[in-house]
Amino acid sequence: MNESERYIGVFDSGIGGLTVMKSILDKLPQENIIYFGDTAHVPYGTRSRAQITDYVIADVNFLRTFALKALVIACNTADSIARTAVEAMLPVPVFGVVEPASRRAAAVTRNGKIGVIATNATVGSGAYEAAVTAVNPELQVLSKACPLLVPLVENGRFHRGDPVIATVLQEYLTPLREAGIDTLVLGCTHYPLLQDLIAELMPGITIISSSEAAADALADGLAAQGLSAAQGGRRAYYVSDNAAGFEAAARTFMGGDLGGAVTLIKPED
Image (cartoon, rainbow, N blue to C red; front, side, top):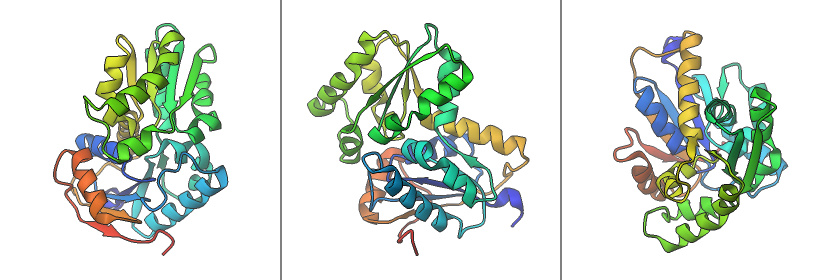
């Protein structure tokens, strides 16, 4: 297998990273991809920094058993907390979600006020504030932790007409709307499933999906380093718990056939 045909490893704490996976497949259908969802430990966003780092190290140790050419941290919490640890483990390029989304938000804001919704851990890390102000120190970032959103999405509560998700979103988004933001970053890879609902509650606000931004950054990075695959398209999915439940949810996230089998493993194996 030549270098360009090696796998892209993608990992997340559960199913949220599938929004990144879908964006990658839409943009780079010829790439060979291994996805790992640490469903035994979801969500990462409510854990301590040390625990998150331990989980991420185990995830990467599993993925590097494959012939990788790149790794995508498809989890804002993992990217904001453990990016340095991941880069130290691998000799291949590492792509994340925080920096690409921050650059995109900085480029499109008109009034300089950018909102970020994310997990407790991502907000607590200050990663988005640092990434946005590295692009333009004049910009203001207003972050809101939204701890209820991941479990609601994981349990299928992300459809129009669901009064629970509508009420929770309204509570989280109202302070950001009242603060006058003109751009909102979905700083968790679960949140693109809520994008239509969020758009209804935030009319006139530009919404940035960290999942789409990450896929674009990956495509640009692979091309720049001569690592883009000309052919392939193999994919496989691994989880640390409840493979059947993951597969059912994944079909909803991916909009149909996954194009590969789902296998249950323990990431420390």
